[in-house]
Image (tube, rainbow, N blue to C red; front, side):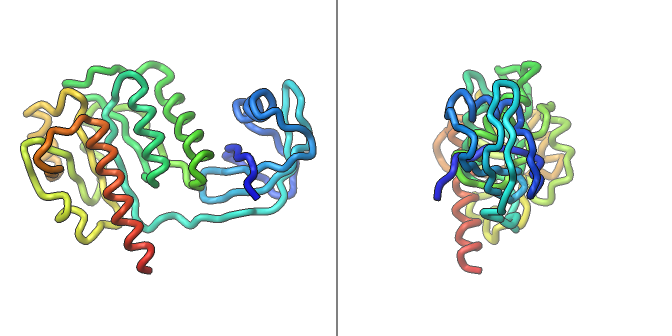
Length: 241
């Protein structure tokens, strides 16, 4: 049976607990659920629990947590994604697709040609979009979304396999993903591309340029393409196990 899903980072089996305010508002004002109805709770860490509504009031929604419905083990393959900040809701769109495609963590960043600038509530908006995608997709692991940082700081994180999409060519994508590393970091440039000095800096930090083919791709197209290819390759390996 499909139950409406809600996000609750803390789940207390066998106990009555409140829903987070934003989730409570959605349950009460949008879905208009009532006491006694059943819902599903996701903790974003691989578990889905069944709960029944015990109290639905204007200032509080409380649920009784019952049985665990599903458990999803963490994937043995992890994709860390360098996410260029984009204008017009495109960053949020890429976060949504990253959740749907099983990406492990997201690193929003700014570089020389980044047009968008992070507002005070950007991280909050990105996490909210990720939670919405989690509930919609049925995935049980919420990606970790890091605060926006400059490219120079991002490049110093200790990822084992490090690549950046490069319009001027590089290692073919098929070689970078064959065999598929257990943990990989991939970065795509912003809408204005990466500056020459940024490309050189990434190489100095042991990032390898990655060739995505003969055509020039928009930043979100390149990002979606890389996430989809990684997802396809990881599913092949998981299905073969």
